[in-house]
Image (tube, rainbow, N blue to C red; front, side, top):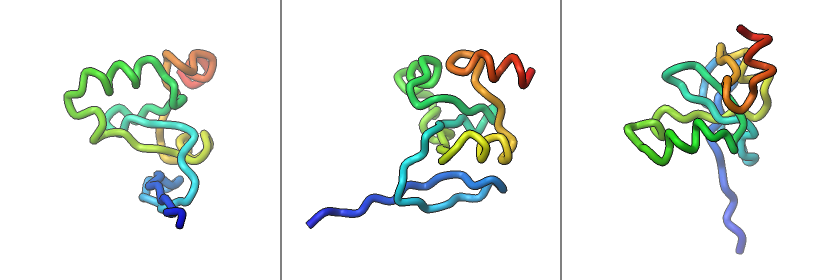
Length: 85
């Protein structure tokens, strides 16, 4: 019997939303930054530790991250970051 997985994502209003689909963007709550799941900056922060994983959030789509007040990562989304800046 397959086990159904549920993921906690952040909604446009910043609330936590349960989803059966994982997020496509990761974010860092402390700096209100979002980026791709393969971001080098995020991976490095996860490797170092220091509580980064407790501040990690996930979004279903980029528009949700923006609506929740997050800005693009300068490392993995440089074009979007330049536009935002």
